[in-house]
Image (cartoon, rainbow over all chains, first blue to last red; front, side, top):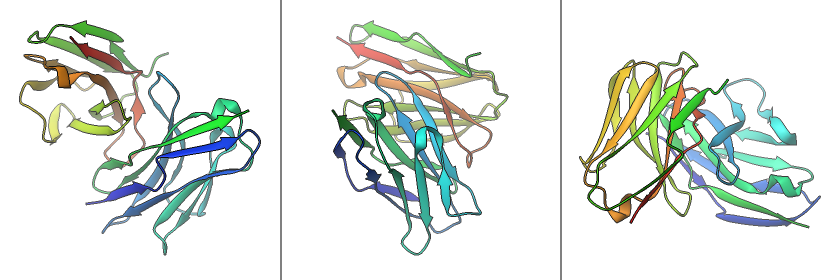
Length: 110
Length: 112
């Protein structure tokens, strides 16, 4: 079975600052990795995914993530955040089935 | 076009009542799911169906019963509602268990 750990439950950051949301996974099989975003009072939507190939994955809204197999990590980054990026972010891993992390609350302050 | 839809969006009810939440997807996916999200945003999978057959049935009370009349629908029926059932319930679908999931807008259930 696979599992995923999001290392920060809350990340406050000022507008236009860079941000990194950390995610580590464990699995005994090959995995696919995902980041989802949940805006207030909405469902989850896909930001980006890693299936294979280049370890640097670009997603929507200027986000990117890097798959690091040796460190079993898939951290999400954005070089300059906006107020509108305030949301809950979920890392997920799929092997035999999909498992979600506990979420990281990103709060962007003016 | 809405990919995954749920009804109702809000549901307020008394303890002990029975209620249902409906979910439909028009993506042609084979796999559908129900998740429960608590007040701390933790997302817990409840059920997974593939081609109308139950695949995952996590430890949930047997008061919760999913029903899949066809591949495009997965409804959730809850008997004898309790205060602890208050949460947001999300339906999702995917091509298979490995691929990205598409989520519905959620149903906020409040049990009084």
